Length: 189
Image (cartoon, rainbow, N blue to C red; front, side):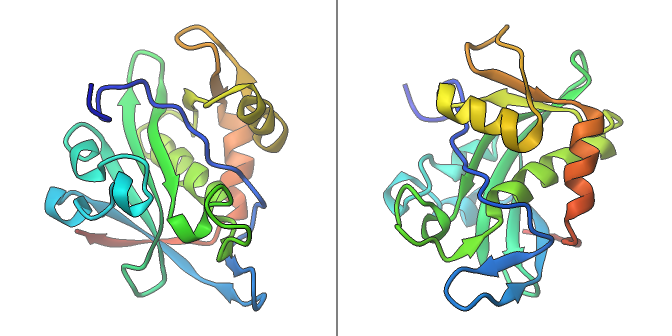
């Protein structure tokens, strides 16, 4: 089984809800943008070998992929793969990953704080654009991550399709979205 056919389990930690990213070494605040990525060839270098957990080049075949980048660059700090679910009236987060240098599971001191919250806010914004009011759902990797999402985002444990299925409803997601100042660059790669 390749990594695109497995159940997606999200393991992104939300360290802080910050309007922009914060450089953990200098404390500098860095502005961000969101770019939609459609090109499989561009995403090919974001794979398991390079610390991105899955082959994002294959993910883009079935999902909408958005990148959180430093403003004015294509310096990707995180990726999120989404699929609208008209039946549930929510955006499904199929996969989410911070850049390796921002992953506390890979580095003791991640480069930027705030990436995880940004990625969830992007999912919520896309849900709003789809007419779902910001509602999102996904599958946490384990009980600890599920409880973290319940605390940090007021997520609700649903557990119907997966033991760690969670949902963040419209009201709670709109509060998260309001925190962020990132812009959609309108650029697509």
